[in-house]
Structure formats: C-alpha cells, structure tokens
Length: 192
Length: 406
Image 1 (tube, each protein chain N blue to C red):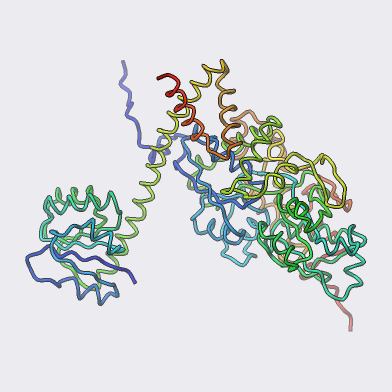
Image 2 (tube, rainbow over the protein chains, first blue to last red; image 1 turned 90 degrees about the horizontal axis):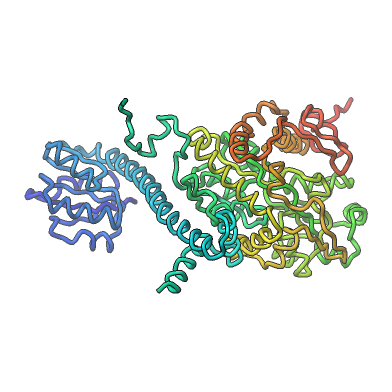
C-alpha cells in the first residue's frame, strides 16, 4: 500500500483530503501545518508521496519543498486554492510534481497521484542523466590533467600515455579515473 | 556579417538539429560473469565511451533469464547476450515476454567449452566414442548442463553431441545452470558435464573437477558467440547512443588485442570481484589461447577467444543470426520455419555497425553473409536456411515426422 504523508497547512480543519485518501486505498500519515521539520519527518516516515494541502503556498512552504526534493526526492503533490500562475511556476521549480487548484474529488485523487508519481520518475531519470553528464565533465578534466603529467614525465605521445594509464588501471582492477587521480595526487605531492 | 544562431542547445533537443550526439549520457549495461564480456568491462572502466559523452554503467547479472527480463523491461539498455536469447525473445519461443530485438554487434568468437566430470574421466569416458558407448549402454541417462534453454550453449552442446551420433534430447538429460555455478554443480555431482563460456571450463580443470572434452571452436572455427543486444525500441529511440556505444566497445576490443600486455592486463581486470570473480589462473591462459584439457594435453589454440580480429568478430552478419535460427528449428524449438532472412535483416543492425566501424577506420565486409564448414562437414553459407535446418541426420524437427501408413 502506498504511504502518503499528508500535510495540512490550512486554517480549516483537518480532513478534507484524509477521508478521500483512505477511501482511495492509501496509507495516510497525517501532519498538521508546515511548522514541522519536513526533512526530518521524511527521514523517519519514508513516505512514497508527499501531499501538501495549503490555501496559498508561501515562502516557507516552498523552502521546505526545495530542501526535500534536493535531499530525499519524492513525488510532491500540492493542493491549493491559489490560482496565481507565478506561484504555480515557483512550486514546480521548487520540485512539486503536481499542482492542483481547488475542487478535490475523491475519485480524482488516485489518477492525480498516479500522474504525479509517473512525472516524478521521469524527472528523476532526467536528473540522473544530467548528473552523469556533470560527473563525466569533472572526470574528463582529471584524466586530461593526468595524461598531460604523464606525457611530460615520460616524454610520450598522448596515445601512449592513455595506454600506460589503462594498463596500470586494468592490472590493479581499477577504473581509469582512479589511476588518473593517483597520478594527479602524486604530482601535487612531488611539486610541493 | 550574417548573424548566426550560436546558442548552445540543450542536449536533449540535439537530435532536432540533426546532431549525431548521443541522446543519453549514461547507459545501463548488463553482463554475465564470463571472459567474453571483456570488451564491455574494458570499455566501461577504461573510459572508452567518454569521448562520446557517454558513461557505461555495468550491472552483473546472475542468470541469462534474469538478464533477458531486465533487458525487455528496460531496466538495462543493452547487454552482453546470447544469439539464442535475442532470437528466442524476438520470435516469442522463450519462457519470457516477446519483444522486437536487435543485435548491435558481435562481441566475441570462440572460447566456449564442453566439459565432463572427473567421475566420467575415471570411468574412461575421455573421448566422444567412449561417451557414445557410455550413453548407449549405461542404464541411467547422463545429465548435461547448459546456460539457457534456447541459448548458444544448448545449441553448441546439441550440435557436438549429434555430430557424434548422440541425440541430445532422447539420449541425455539437459538442465539449465548459470555459467558461474557450473563448477559447483559438477563438484556436487548434480551434473555429469556442462557447456559454458570460459573461465568456467578452465576452472573445472584447475579444480580437478573435470576435463575439457571439446572446445566450441572445434565445432566451428571462428563461430559467432556473444553479441551486444538490446530491444529494437532502444535502437529506434536512441540511434546515436547505440552507435556511440558500438564505437566505444569496438575501440575497447581493438585495444585489448593490440598487444599481449594489453590482453594480460585485461585478464587481471576482468578476474576482479566486481566482474568475472574468478582466479586469474582460470581466466588468463585461455584468454591468451593456452589450453590444458585436464587429460594431460596442452596446446596453443589457433582459434581461441577473440574479441576484435580487426573487426571480423564484430560485424553482425545476417548469416550468423540465420544459423542460430536453423538450429532452433532443427531441435524443434521453432515449430515452423520463420521468414529467416526477413527476421535476420530486422534483428542484425548491419547498417548501424557499418557506420560505427567506418568512422573508426575498421574494415567492414561488403557482404552480410559469411560461410563456414563445421565439424561434421556441413557447409553453411546462409543461402538456404530452411534446407540447412532439415539437412541433419539427428534432429527433433516438429511437423516433419514420417507419416506412418496404416
């Protein structure tokens, strides 16, 4: 069963979503107000989805969303009464997977959460691709640096430097980047 | 001066502008703990894909069936694969789901072996004739293991047994065991022999658990072995990624075969815990062509495992795909003749391979067919697959049983 962390940030009374969620077959953990430390609660409760019910998402709400989506990414669905398109954009930028204005009907909850989760998964895949790209760029610089050091020390060609580094890495059951790091570190040690 | 739009484009939209940059930055690749996964392991760890902006993430799999399922479900983008696995999924004859599949390139030729237990050796069953007598005259059926029901090792085992007059379905019992568990099964007496990729044959010999009665290259010198496989959907959706992947693996295979020293360091690398996880003494000799069969014979094999062979290994010939279909048909795994050539043309990605190899100045054959003479004298050139499938004395062809007159 999917665990939903429901955060009620409305002055109204609890419950406009709670019953509907339980009826739709979710396991609901409820928290009132965003005065809680969301990050900490996420860590202990490990919900599958976070649902925030708020009249109007203020700065502190957004702040918490940003932190959560950075450190413990989960699909976040926001229900609100605020139609301001700028606020909606801010919310999406902060990491909200779905922004739903008004009119919550019990039978709509399940598809909304399904879409939010699908959307979240696709965002995560894109994020993983971007992180891979960033790591590649960093590693590329280190390998280039190591290659340059080796070419100078051994007065060899670029191709030979690569071959030397690769053979060394393979004989030690390491990746090329690991050997490159060792060369760079050793060079720093010798230069200082 | 004319103004030009020099804004850098986000990579995800690069294809719109006709760029040939890979659509993905990271690719998940499955492999099995086998020596012939070497070019994938070297490509991924030694930075051969980085010039294309690609990171290869390797994922070791425990069984071919598990690898197949993850490939179909998309958890793996591409994988070290068996011809028989790719074609059985494509033709819908395996246990799993059916999906359009693709062979991007060949990864290896040769380097598999058929091994029998030390008990059979002690009983004097050390050559095919003795095995034939043993199968005919002993009461209990021998149990021989291969690695996947419709897989390459099943087909090598069947071919070799049949060439020696042993019917692989009627005369022996065959079971499926993951390659890395063969030696343990042999040791426990659960199987009498197995056909698998190295280093597991060498390991059985080194451990004194068995001996190598035949190498796969003695069945067909320079036979097609593992391939780089994926779903057809992956190639269609990410053609540039697929091409870059082929180029990276081609460069890694070229590097491995550049010198004996490179082969040796390759053996060191792949023997590691995260990869083949076997003693270097089992991995290195046969990777260098040095065979010992456990019966006192040692030789330098002229058709040992090769991963590149100046590109001869890597071209996904239509005829290679066709041959495996003829054997699936021969043993009744395919109930009827498929449209052999149409299927092979769809699965074997010769065009994509040609682009990749040409960009690296690696020679590519003009023909999509190659010919060979196998151990039993059968000649194969891909021209008449349906006829070839019917040309064998021993078979289990479905739908061709002789009609008995009342």
